[in-house]
Image (tube, rainbow, N blue to C red; front, side, top):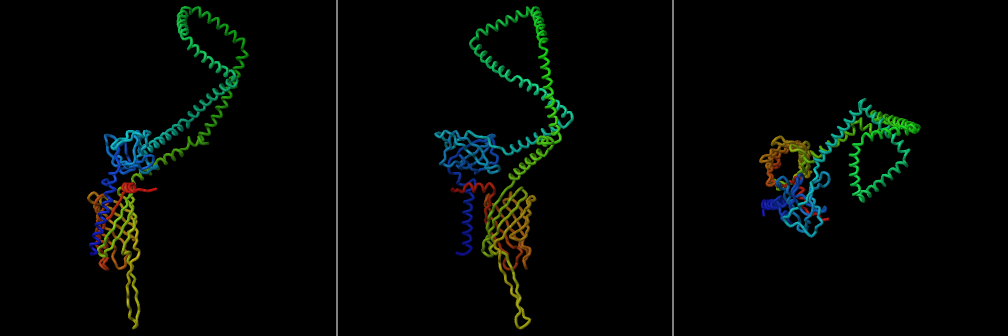
Length: 506
């Protein structure tokens, strides 16, 4: 069999294998045919992707096969492995692995182990997922409220009127507490007896009211009658009250010494309250000067500014993490001139839609060309002989590029195959076809720069073919060659699907 036939068979087998694995891990794959289906509805399935894990008690039991819109709710179609049965009273929720990890569906098993959900059944009990963006917005609102509170507190007590009002309040409180303290300290036993009596009275009244309900009704009727009689006897009652007032005046006159002692006690209590208010005034002056922990909080905005900066940093980090995309691709090129294969492996980090960074390795069968010229002098004298040797070294090369997109064109530059280089790509057909031109290795001895023209076309989402001309400007040493190749590429979501489909044994 000729070399061309063997290469053709190899490429055809590679296409068949890559196509099989591409369809197997894509939405047309055969993985979804195993197990039985369940459905569950959520208010929102933001951040959840098809092929995400379904776990019960932390153990993977299936995958999210499809996400649909049912009315105003998100409906998830779950594919559960045949050996797992879900109790009918189980609860489903959307969880996140870590703070910023990928999302998955968690099923908390119910207690009814006798009744399980049948194929095509629905999990009716759900928990609303935690919204990180809403939590960040609430934290920002809390920061704003703290800022308003500290500003209001500073404006209220930062003026002379505010200080005076606070001092007056503290002085009144000090006087009141001193008076109450003096009264309570001098009559502790009396208060204890009063509380005991009140407790007994409450018990007696409860007992009387329960035993003598009818008598109480009669008493109330008598009081009503007495009130009517009292209205008619007001003049006589006035005379009696006047007599009682005279008696009270006599009693007060007989106890003037006791009344005087009570007034003296009130003066002492007032003096103690004044001392307490003076101490509170000194504390407020320290707060106003920014002394102590409370003074620093009231007069210094450092704590508020630190909290605001922290919340802003969390918000920026979350946004950048959500925007960052990761792509991995591998492809090989069959070079017609040397009948060798050239391998490429690349990692691309794309923080925004119009900018990306790329690093990669290249396995070049030719390597880097080194030319050495040696001149020898032979006899007869004056006769020289020049020999030139060519060697290829450093077959493994690396690439590190930064690229910027302008409309349909992408300009890139950096290190290409271990030398400085620049490139230009043009993407058409909704970015499925890429036409590119790379120039690098500008310092080759006796040779023009290495110029490569190529085209990449995406057959399906994860599979593409490539072809073009390598070393276009080279006219010597048979360096210029046509090439054809095939490759695979994966994005973030594809990597999650592939890793989720690979069984891992503990």
